[in-house]
Amino acid sequence: MIVILLRNDKTRMILKESLLEIFVRESQKVGNKNYFLTRSDLRGMPEKNKALFQYVPSLNNFSTYEISEREIPSAMVEVDYGIAETGTCVIQCADEQIRLATSLAETLSLVLPASRIVPCSYDLIDQMEEWTEKNNYIAFITGASRTADIERELAIGVHGPAELIIYIITDL
Image (cartoon, rainbow, N blue to C red; front, side):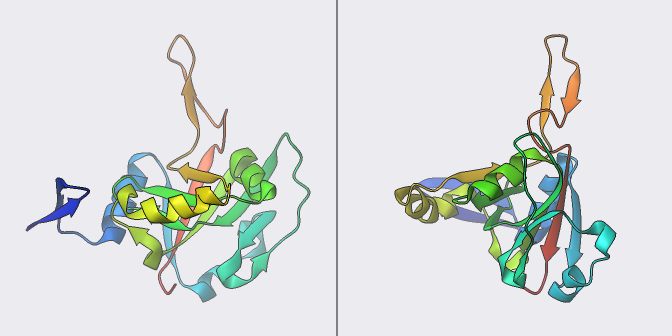
């Protein structure tokens, strides 16, 4: 079945799938690992799987880790929205520590409440306008950092995380 959605006077067609299914499919296309968890699953994660820097407000989970301007082994940050169409996570980054953590972590774990997945970026226009009026930064993260040199040799993790893990929280 095909559903036709109108967005800003443009007609777009999408297959009738859940936003969650679309998000995961698109996220996996760029090599992300996606896991489905409940809040209690995330809270009960073994210590070895926990990140040094943690910012997960919906679970009251914060950790202090001195982030140098060079690197941080691991970070876990809650995202504000997920965009199903591209498998992208959106984070309002007013805090410099969050910007550093999402940019410098070797392994970046993102916590995405399933209820915050929207069909496409057009659905976030009002929210992004509100954030930018407050001079906040907005990060769009789709996958691990990838770049290539002049000989087209692919390098992963040069300008950001080498690995991206997304924990989709099903009961948030």
